[in-house]
Length: 414
Ligand SMILES: [Zn+2]
Image 1: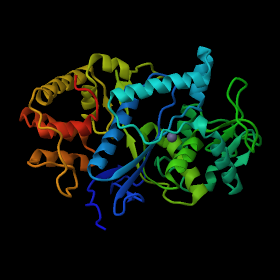
Image 2: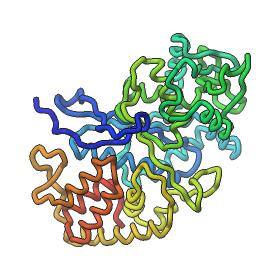
Image 3: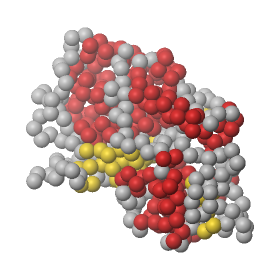
């Protein structure tokens, strides 16, 4: 049985703070083949999807398409956090049912991502559909000595010596961040033992949904939902765990602690990839600051492929500032691209040639090598977009078509 050719892609791992060869597993369904098990933390569906979300999910879409083009199968799981306090709070504020709000916003998120031409995840588990399994994970943690019950069920952070390693934060910095986010809670005989401890299972408020568990009726904590959903759909170890950088602490730090404590399978994720923050008007784009640019607004002003190219012109790890002029420039590039590919200059879909590591075609150029080198170098999409610009300028329709299929997926050019 022949092995697939080597994958040369390297990615930056937040835990080790190093560039690593992209972790991949053996594909049980294809002897000699590779598989990438990918888990990306998804949205809490209570409000319109904004650019920060789109940036994260489009970055992982490029990763998936690139890895697939290199011959690796991808099993992509992205959850929907439809059991979460911000959702319940919004439903209360608006006087609507939490599950109806979640359903509506989830549909709107999927419509946005579909317009942006993503390759949908293979599984999009919803926390609300796995609460019984989540409760049983909490039970197993308690049996193993990794949970205690007072006014809620908490994870004792002192039992996991590596807590803080992923975020590279000191204990005092972690405490400061929790305090700033209003998540510190109370310490005492009828509350947490340690202010860093976090809830695995809590009682629900009177107007919130509640599920049965061995610890009483209530609702799961946010972090344990992702531990359960990732293990449920991808097993005890995943190749790449992704999400926005604002999730590193406390969400991913806690997810890692729970998962490794429960399974003993270390590392829980072989690489952690985190996307940068998008700023607008000088501040991080966030609901609380009200400086959101929502996906729909961009799609009204520019073709979907232009939005993708504008996002891709920033490498996934960088923090950057949204500017409408940037979207306008990407729109001009997209118009030239549409002329090149749609005006009879297209060379048809590129064909796979031999056992090349990337699906290429006869006459693949230095430009194609430059594009491949850019994505292999920790997904440097900014450099890849520059290669696409050159391909468009040179009128190289075959190269431009291939690059566009990876950077923009199936997003419309006009
Ligand atoms: Zn998560």
